[in-house]
Image 1 (cartoon, rainbow, N blue to C red):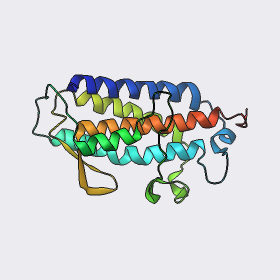
Image 2 (image 1 turned 90 degrees about the vertical axis):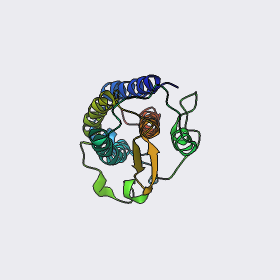
Image 3 (image 1 turned 135 degrees about the vertical axis):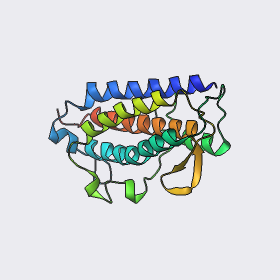
Length: 191
């Protein structure tokens, strides 16, 4: 794919996610945000708290790496590394907007293990994070998405190309927004 195509894809997904938050999640009551299918599942606040933790790490890392890069000329094409493709494709939803395989969140990103992650304004905070992500995407148009390396959140030793890290983050966001959408569409969800 071209670098421009990659940027357009992450921009489109981010814009769609922002629209979904505004249309479906900002209007929820506190009771609705706290409702769970069962004790082992996440509620809406917990889903967005998880996403906010990811945003804190990745968006700050993106900003720092983009600001400090010496690779100021974009590459015409973007080629994912085998590791990068594996990481972001594991997050990508299937064609029917379904989760292809479930994964467990690490404890430091899991609100069931660390309830201090949930702030109560988690949906609103994630809306701000997506607006920030739009700015980050805009600032990445004039840099090389292949040369900048981003350490992943669970191991600083594993580094992804910026383009692969972008895809990972936006697919991760999309995956969890689908999880939240499935929750609010549950027949037992409070009206």
